[in-house]
Image (cartoon, rainbow, N blue to C red; front, side, top):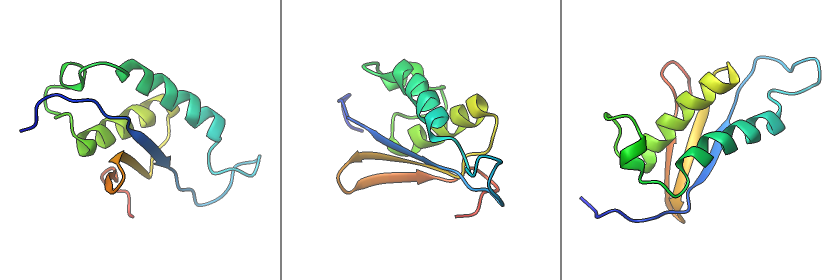
Length: 101
């Protein structure tokens, strides 16, 4: 196990829909960006081991799962996928249960 260290995570959330809403969107990116900024702002500069639920480790995979859950709650809609990039070439993608890639 690695000792605690910092990362500049890059988070990408994607959404799917069978059709577009009345404004012609799958999802409003401004709303998604604001929700993601609030959620990640709570984590910024903190030890993720102290903030994430006890059953999560501070890995890109667990962070992607955590963020997918928080985004789903905040936006009241299913997230198709959350990708967390730790550094170039090190990326984890989480697809919530029941969501097809």
